[in-house]
Length: 88
Ligand SMILES: [Zn+2]
Image (cartoon, rainbow, N blue to C red; front, side, top):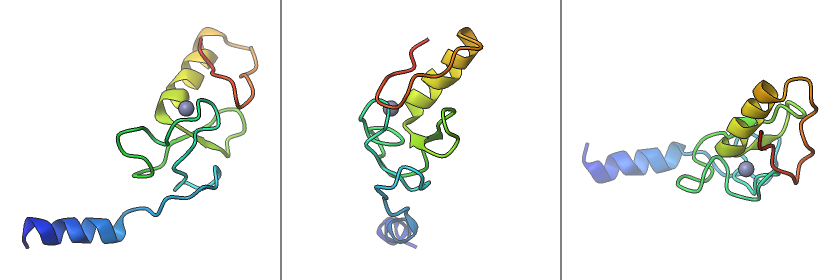
């Protein structure tokens, strides 16, 4: 199979981007930072991070990391609402 045909197959099975933030195919904007999901290099290519705030909304990978660090370094404090960063 030529490289072009391999790329065609990949395009056919690629995730179709969604605007629903509860869909694993959500491509953004990220409810925390407004950026693409999962990241600016490959928006919509794969699921973003599941937010720890409601365990239902997908956010970008960078904000997912921020939420994890927030929970680690500020244990016991509630995560900020969507629309705000969760910088630790
Ligand atoms: Zn984000």
